[in-house]
Image (cartoon, rainbow, N blue to C red):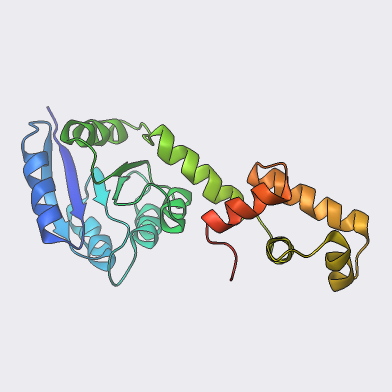
Length: 206
């Protein structure tokens, strides 16, 4: 049986050591290399030709998201499993947009990590429901235009529709249309909910 070749990318040596031990415990896998930063993992892919890369996001020199992009542009058949400390972040969303095949948090059970490697190696995709929901929220937020963010900021500071209309020299109907678009993108139905979501996602400046 052909073993799955796994490349480990994490800037913490203890994490890499633990993953190497875990992967070594599965007779269907073998570790072909380890990298401590994004630039190193891009280079190692060319040398080791892994089937799956277990990729950290926050690494020095080159982020996991950017490394994912560069690797998949050159080696589109390589599978990338993101292992991160955070269930949602702009970096994680970027990694998914760049083609990562799966995501798990670093507190995932050992058997879940092994299962995930097998899943992505076979062409599957694995993103837990909670992370998927968080990512959808990040993607929705990313769709807000700079003008919509400015209007949302004014709303958060208590400005009325009339104030916003005067500020941007638009009609009240135009303001209402902007607000309705913002509500739709954020999945809310009121000014208060929109501001609450924006504060939670740290979109506004105070």
